Image 1 (cartoon, rainbow, N blue to C red):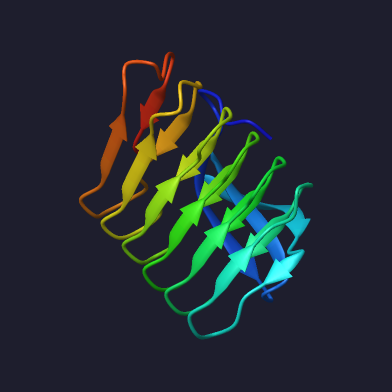
Image 2: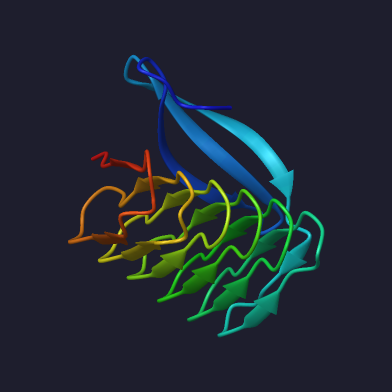
Length: 156
């Protein structure tokens, strides 16, 4: 599901700690769409979670987590706390959550959503990334001149 002018991706969340869902807002009405079950789960405390070379859905849950997608087209969800998310090689989706997070898509055309909090988003790999600092907070996005066609959006 890709947001367009009529569909706006507002937030990504975890339901029942095992399924990642997107909430899509259309004309002021929000609907939930299940994306994928978590293949690697964190705990309520701080975790370091590393994905495989394939496609992973990594959910940090509570605590100050470090998530590394490794290779593959991954989905990383930090959850509560001050999280660090690194997508690794591949076209990844990263969602920080309510804390002040650091997010880096790394190599690939990534979609990075900061969420609530004061987030820092890095995009300096030379690929076209889609960046969204999220609602609220004082977010910063860093990119270099090689990151062509990078689109920075802000909802809220």
